[in-house]
Length: 264
Image (cartoon, rainbow, N blue to C red; front, side, top):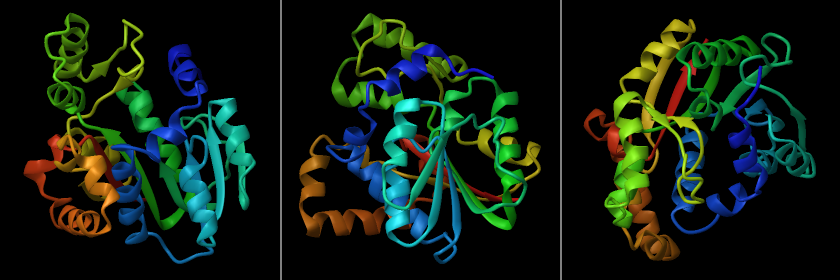
């Protein structure tokens, strides 16, 4: 099994840590952590972080006392994650995990699903997540909303750019996202889910859906969000409101990222 070369090249640039720890990206990080803290079993549970990147979540979880192993197809990410205290890492593919059956209490997959363009591959990845987690364990997987690029373009006022319109046309037609112009702010080859698709993929993999939650909800569209996040009072109020609307079905599509919770 192979990962598209442009996806590997995108992450080999080493920008993922900076993306999640600055600007708008902090909301994705903090909201994902908040949701996980409300659903994870107590430490020292065993966590398999599939597509764990440079180890941002792995380092956080290890610091909380969890036993964390990262699997990622990008060698740079594996090297970065393996250098973190309390974290082990290896090169691997979400569709064919090397781990034994029922060896982890939690599987995180905060990236693999949206780099698998074929539904059969995504279902296969879900099957692997369910295989390696213990009965009743937690699988938490991220997806990107079908409408994320369109909303981002509206926020950044780039809708007149022909290359942007080409990208959005693919998103809206069948969920495919391709950065044919190789522009640094247009992400890389990916699949953007309609929120209603996720339950079917989980079910077809033989897992039980526990919930689909909006991560950023509407807040990521606010141009002054970084300033708001810098203010502890406004940040706390924002995070509290987002908890209250995260499961609202009518708002799922407007969130940039979705977090799917499931169990075998």
